[in-house]
Image (cartoon, helix red, strand yellow):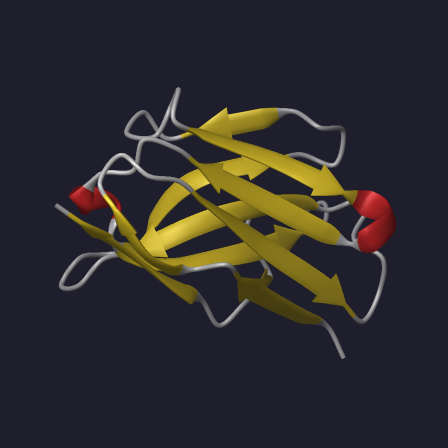
Length: 117
């Protein structure tokens, strides 16, 4: 059974940092593209950033220069390092995975990030 489990969320003051982790299980994800999404209250889910199976990263304009993504393929884990956090970064953060697909197929249950002003 494929599972993605996020961790590392919490409450942080504006300007602070958090590091989210997403542990995948059920099979190896070394050839998957992995992504991070977020959904704020009363808003649609949006793409935050992703890392391809080859290590290429992409980010939404709203987080460029503040967030980074890395992966440890040996541990089937992807990380989202969030620096210089802003109140508008408050959301539930989800990780997702896809293998040779245009759509993300597997999703975690999410972890709450709250940034206070």
